[in-house]
Image 1 (tube, rainbow, N blue to C red):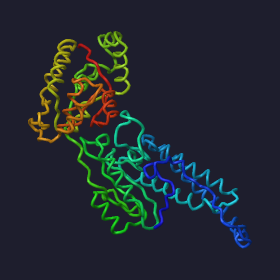
Image 2 (image 1 turned 180 degrees about the horizontal axis):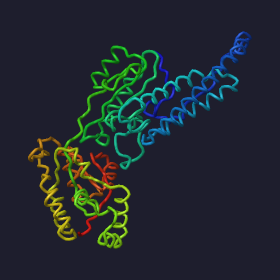
Image 3 (image 1 turned 90 degrees about the vertical axis):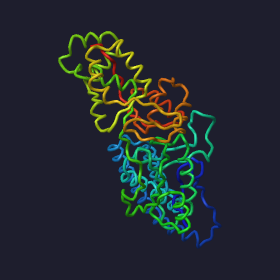
Image 4 (image 1 turned 180 degrees about the vertical axis):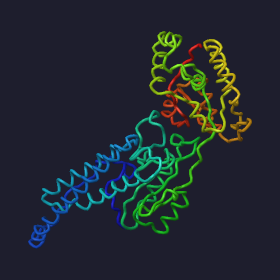
Length: 422
């Protein structure tokens, strides 16, 4: 078996991508071997020059892809890896022994090209060459080699981890690599979509033996041929939720006069006076004038709306304290009739009209264990995870804090909107 990827991401060996060793070999020199070496150098230098050109083309392809998809995390890592191969290939042209490093560079170039092709092909790509660990980085000391894997392509909005293998023959090490990814994906800090672990896919140019294929199949790991892969061959993923969970900041955004015509020119004197009182009011008005939030349109794609009882109670108190008559009327006539008020049951299920019972006791406990968040902040996030509803919130800091602690919440984060009092 011949594995072509000399260097691969850290989870293969625990080494960084720049740690490849290219120590020269030291054979016993003979007159015939020296003569053959001199004769082969021009051909080797030509091969190195061609390899350098191919590396440059790959760099250009990655740059073009990055311009089209600047949202993909880690694309700069892929570009730097291609640049390193280009520079190494260029150094071979003037090397005393150019043939020594050509095969390794060729293998690595093939692997990098496959990673780019996969990123171009896969749906919903969010990252390439992204590292994942068995625990959040905010806990404990440095990670050990067994705690970290590097995923070549993260797709389907994080629900799909793809391992790329540019092999021309049977792969000898794909099984332990894929199983390591499977193990890390099950860690609570990597679970998405209400606690589901990402699916693992091997995207390969070579073939697998029956034993290797059996191991991966038994582990629930899919293998796709890069030569004829189609997106319909990918594992079935959970359907997007059709239930929206509203926290108090989302309710403010729905009924505020700012987001319901108050930012339309000409701006009324009442709105102008309100914006002048506090900097956050002025920022809220400017943001709405530049780009209307229109949260109602976003919610139109959901079949049902829910909210935690504590959220509704706090919202009522604030609305009747600082809200104006139009804002209260908007709540009572437009939004209150549409929102089901529900709370998680002690056994982790949720019962309410239009809401199926769901088992999420473990997920609820994970949310409740989060530190640095108040009980009032935790209430809507717990409900969202238990009811499998996407939580609409302007509390981006809380979402980030939860992620740092290893809980990836299913949320829609929007900007903060204030009640006006009109």
